[in-house]
Image (cartoon, rainbow, N blue to C red):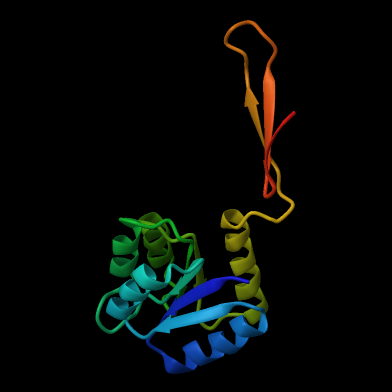
Length: 152
């Protein structure tokens, strides 16, 4: 399914997420600190990032700031910081969602599915483009599906 990068310094969390994510059909890549995480983001180009805020070298918010300079990959913050101010700051810096530890596994998977739906088009998804005539002729519609463009 999707490639998900987890940046978290807690080995037990990474192990648990690996079981959970792989059980749901995803491939997990991991990093145990912010520096290695930023490097993995650039090299691996994951479909989604799960990011802890309390990292040993770079704060998770700094990782997020650096990431947003060049990437729009969806980011779910998974942090032990329950303060609403931390949540607001992370969302304002560029996170797409925020979940506090401890967390419920089905809720985490549901949030990941929601984030991935926004960036991964369904196989049968069709986009319709309306092109109004500028010359007084008839308006045109073009459809794009995974099979390509067609006139309509």
